Each structure stands twice: as C-alpha cells, then as structure tokens.
Image (cartoon, rainbow, N blue to C red; front, side):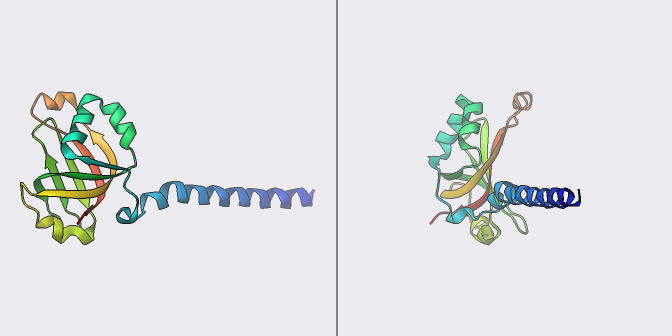
Length: 151
C-alpha cells in the first residue's frame, strides 16, 4: 500500500512538472520572444493589409493571428510614451494600424513624422472594429506589438 502511494505521488509530481513546462513554452516563452530576430511570416503594405481586413476580417484575423508581419506604409502619427511609443498608419479608410514599438526603438519612433514612409516589423495581436462606433466616425484598429523599424 505504501509503495502505491509513493508511486502515485511521484507520478503526480512528474505530471505537474510536465504540464508546467508545456504551459511555459506554449504561452509564456512564445509571447516574450524577440520579434526582431524572428523570421517574417508576411511582408505587406499597410494599404493591402487594411483592404484584406475590410474584405473579410474573420479570414484575415485567422491568417495573421500570432504572426510576424513586416508592414510598409505611411505614418499618420506617433503616440509617444515614456517606455513605449506607438506608430499609427492610417490610409484614410475605416481602419488604422497601431504598432507598439520596443522600448529600444522609442527614440527612432518618436522622430517619425506624419507622411514618412517606413517599414516596421511586429507581432500581430488583434483586430478591433465595432460597426456601431463606425457610424459615429470611429475607426477600427489592427494591433501589433513588439515593433521594430526595419532599416
């Protein structure tokens, strides 16, 4: 009886450790990877990306989910912050693209001006669009994080 109990405890500890390792690599490590050094999954212009979402947002969201994108487009504005600066690309349609930059790219991002053409690499994290708000002039937003300016 004692032997079965010890075996059960060792088995449960091993199972818990395996689950913890799986969760770490599947969710935590993947989300904290350095995007600058990762292979680009898609190279696309901001105009084409916005058009793809306008045609079929569900399909586009699935296609780009958790993928590294390299987007070339015109800067509409930057939203400076202490540790993170966001770059916004707006092609005058119902959607904008907002890219949160890596902290080490803050100074480069803050120096961007409206109208500058730029290529930024980042991780696609989601899409927000509410048709009710669109009736009041609000635009949807394609979101990326961990952005870096490609030279």
